[in-house]
Image 1 (cartoon, rainbow, N blue to C red):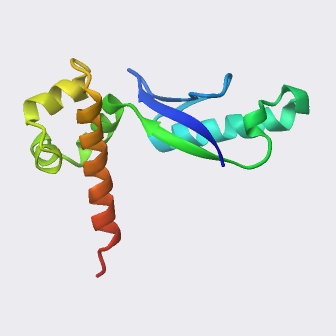
Image 2: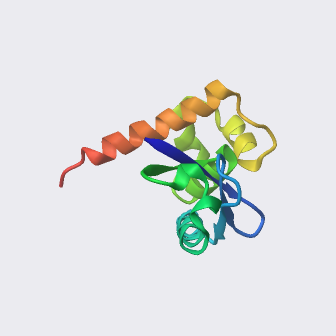
Length: 132
């Protein structure tokens, strides 16, 4: 299936979203969820108000939207939930390094970014198995 890759980034004032592999699709909002909804609406409007020949081929037929955070935005968004100490326990990356990543002072190497991603996926899997 075709994939439209949407990047969500935190700017000074809001979250922005844009299609990495389709020109002209942008959104934004005060939260990542609002930025997602904004970009979904942008795609809907693009398809509704343009002639078929003006619609990018990837948006014709079936496709799925894949949402990706940049590391700074992900860490800052979840800062309300996780301390740097908790993120260290989850990822094995020391707190000072996590702080550098969340502030944008340093950008994680691919292997470090993957550790962060896998830690969040592992936590999600564990939470999905919880029953009360």
